[in-house]
Image 1 (cartoon, rainbow, N blue to C red):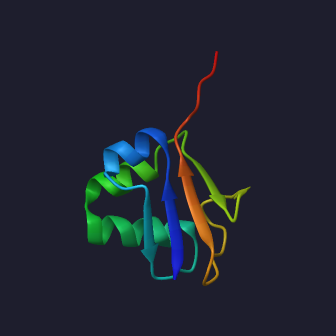
Image 2: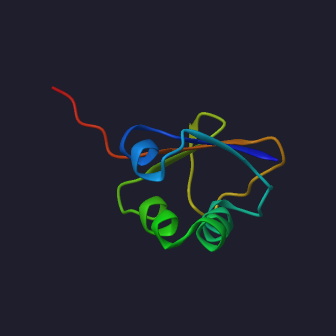
Length: 81
């Protein structure tokens, strides 16, 4: 299983901060799986151009391979001041 975490705007729009999800081959396959089971909004939001993805707290690419037990986090763009 993977632990999925969603932050800030994504957490609000998806109405969840954390999910346990079956392991997938890579991040893109994970997003496909979420979209298939949770709806088009999930795919649209998680594929956003500025979404940052981290695997085990290290920034990752969408094609990066996943392993059982990984934590995958999705972050929207962050602004500061």
